[in-house]
Length: 214
Image (tube, rainbow, N blue to C red; front, side, top):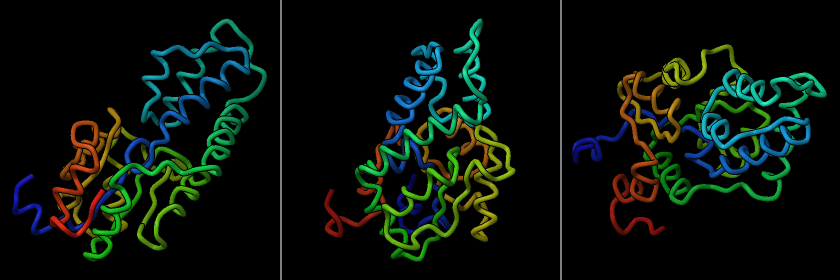
């Protein structure tokens, strides 16, 4: 990104949630591992890696692989209800906000730049995370509950830009996962890959020196 990009700023910022705004990927990983084991399946390291940032449909297929030759004790909806309940219990104790996230969100809000969360999680998980930030900083939330193709399809990001009334090409997306980054890049927006440049670096890039310390 150039100095001109820094000065002009994006028309909107679109935030992935798990792994980008909040460090919840370890919570999801443990929730899946424990629930699969409790149901009599086997959750491998390879499946855990492939589940990072995956859509609900893709994760369900990975879980199904865990029960090949076995008879799970319930339905997929019951399984994922247990997984979500595990995650919600953990979030009740603490929402692990990523370093730099609050500063960036507050900065963009102060600049009048609209912001949206674009996530593969459902709204029941999104709510406690949104509540961990200042009120009304997010102008839209695009979640897995909506009838929109999931990442790596760019549709969720394109839809978020439309919700905010801006062109997707003028947006800045913060992402971390393989499917999420694929969706972000395919959308035509500017993309900040937090796996290569963590949020504290974005703080230094977007916020003038002396305004914030992290």
